[in-house]
Structure formats: C-alpha cells, structure tokens
Amino acid sequence: MKKKPVQIIQLILFISFLILFGRFIYSFVAALEHHQQIQQQTEKSLN
Image 1 (cartoon, one colour):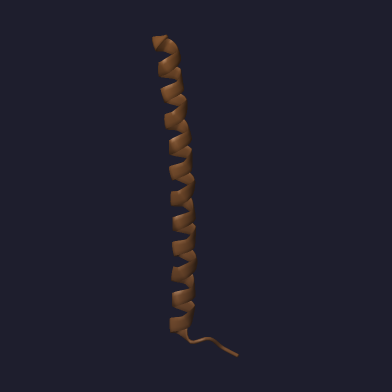
Image 2 (cartoon, helix red, strand yellow; image 1 turned 60 degrees about the horizontal axis):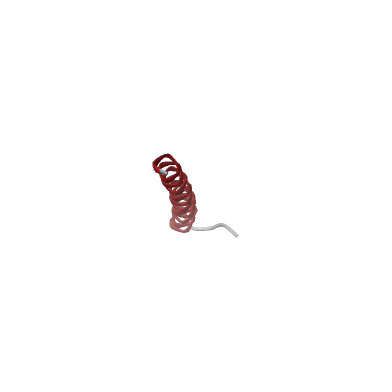
C-alpha cells in the first residue's frame, strides 16, 4: 500500500511542526528557570 506524495509531504510537515513546537516549549521552560535563578541572585545580593 503506497501513500500518495501529498500524504508523505503532509506527514513530514506535521512531524517537523511537532519537533519545532517541542523545542519552543523546551526553550521557554529553560528561559523561565534561568530568569528565576537571576531574580534569586539579585535578591540575595540586595539583602
């Protein structure tokens, strides 16, 4: 059972979108953690 070329292209685009979305979520979480660490460091240095 062969897939049509259009279906293959759609599948590749869908997988690429999932990878891109996953990387965006990962970088967003990492940036939040980094921001919180910087805030904690500045609070400690002010006290």
